[in-house]
Amino acid sequence: MSSIAAIVAEIAEEMRGETERGAVASYIPPLACISPDKFGIAVVMVDGTVHAAGDAQEPFSIQSISKVFALTLALGAVGDQLWRRVGREPSGSAFNSIVQLESEQGIPRNPFINAGAIVLCDVLLGRSEPREAIGQMVRFVRTLAGDDEGSIRIDEAVALAEQDTGFRNMALANYMRAFGNIHAPVERVLGVYFHFCALAMTCCELAMAGRYLMNGGRVDGHSIITPSRARRINALMMSCGHYDNSGDFAFRVGLPGKSGVGGGILSIVPGVASIAVWSPGLNGSGNSQLGTLALERLVQRTGWSVFEPRA
Ligand code: GLU
Image (cartoon, rainbow, N blue to C red; front, top):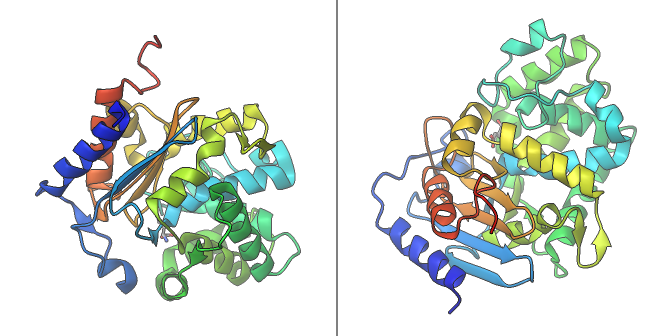
């Protein structure tokens, strides 16, 4: 067993015994019913080796982690023009906060808060139909993950529940439309947004899908995005990937990472590994309690923090 394999197995074992597991998201029934006992971890190394442990093969709702893939597609669609409509600063506010939008004229702080991701959906929708934008996303994520069988899918029950309870997202979208920063009808944009949130993936699939970000934009010999865009997406994941907890994640883990309220985190060690962890219990800021702890232990034992001197 390689030492990384041993560390991954050891961390999964330690997480099994943890009693402080956080609270499972309760805003929609399909998330509220997930057992807090779940924990999965998958590490894909730059040479393609995969180390996985725990519930790494169980699909979960990736929620806001989809914002990374939406950003990648939106940059592909409109390039750096995107930055006229979305900022690149940490918000210091909750994921669904509306407060900054008023003083900042409807320009969201960054693409990884809800308001920012709703703008990404508007960009991707363009003049097409919502189902085309949703289909494009599913195909993109399957390609990134090397999912030839098409097992990655959208959980329609989650998408519907998001729609039924998404009043704050509706408020954000309408508010930005009032400032002219949402162009398509709000219901269509949100239909896309809710379906992106409802993507279901396993840790193994998610870690595979993150490979382009560890590899300077390339995967399986194909260029997905330019090296400079991959670097910038990683920078945004580091500074904005954990809402108002992003500073703490950088402090504890020191890697680009994006979390979702389903309890998943995608984290990238540039040039070394793509990592996905999942445990549905969340800390007070809505980030996976054990997922963060597992990543903290992984970087302590591997020296993978980007702030660690390279040998
Ligand atoms: N579906 C959630 C929302 O938009 C996503 C939040 C998240 O994962 O942070 O409210």
